[in-house]
Image (cartoon, rainbow, N blue to C red; front, top):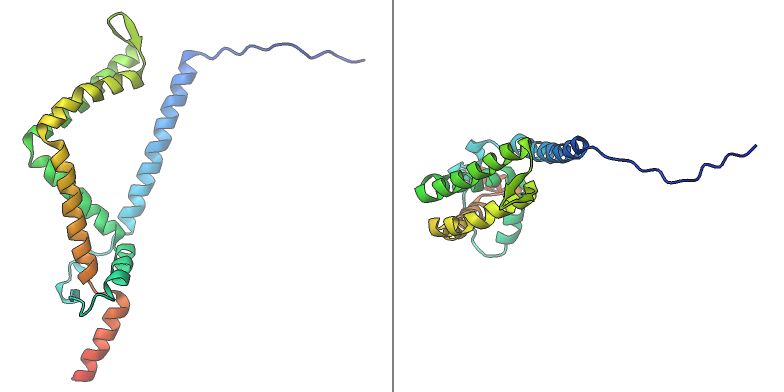
Amino acid sequence: MESDLSGNIEVKESGTSTKKKGIMAINLSNVNAREWFQKQRDSIKPWAEFANTSKFRIPKSLTPIGPRIIKNIEHYQANYIFVFLGLVFFCILTSPLLLVAIAASLGACYIVNLKNQEGKVKVLGRELSLAQTYCAIGVASFPLFWLAGAGSVVFWIIGASFLSIMLHASTHLTQSEQETVELLDMETV
């Protein structure tokens, strides 16, 4: 007694299940971002230790700078990330036109997202997906960001972050260097 189980099975997916999959993908990426951000927040060293001026010494030669930078970047990575984010917020808040450009772009994305929940957005009689509308907003926002000076802000942030982080990392004593300095101080007394 053998059964023939061959044939074509067609599975129709409803529109809601594909929407749920897209939402789940977005939520998962948000969870990963939140976990990474929380991990960085948990690994922040005390700001008093980070900014302790007694632990800053200019190296006597160029030899210890490389290892010192590497060790300090590993040790204070989360602090350096928050220094970078602070510079980003400073630049955005002190540039009113850039603040308006970001608000307009994010506002347009929010409105498109609301319209997309009601149904697909139609432009000139053609239905556009959410990704296509976001792309159109990005293209339309580009001249506004250019006029607001976003390019110079980006390079200023990169330059200021690099300079401040490298100055701190190259002049802040590492844990092993602090111990040797303490031993030398104790011997001279």
